[in-house]
Length: 185
Image (cartoon, rainbow, N blue to C red; front, top):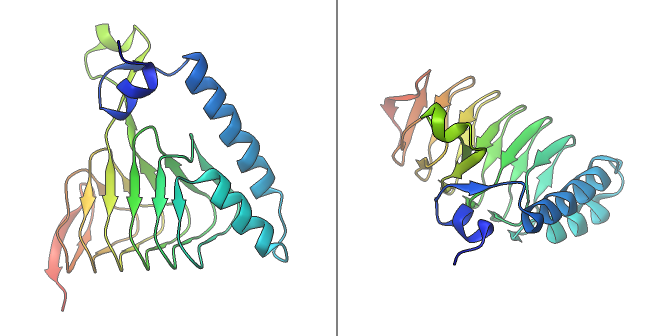
């Protein structure tokens, strides 16, 4: 029989109040609290905390506090990753972020979601779907990346966009819902 964590990571309905998941969530909150309490001069401490929190973090990762996530261990960030103030990653499933990805303030990346059927939703069960962000992507301020989305390499997502479907490589995409408005390169 699968654990609730195994269900969560395989995209099945799961209970987030499971003891194993609760313990991992509390671990992440402790590390996030410590991270958000660091000062601008404690760059080495920030790197060490990100390495402990994330599943993988590449070279030269910078996240300007405050930052929030669910578990951290399902976040895999490449080299030269930058997130500005107030960003959130709900990593109830894997979130893969490529190299040279830039996130403006208040970007929200949500692998977590809830059943649409209220009968199932009332059971307390949740869902999570992986997200993949390619290399050399820029995500504008306040953008929301929804569960299950893939964003291709070299793409720019405009500020305030709500990305509900996959966005291909080498495009500028904006709006709610986010849509391609022109090709790049």
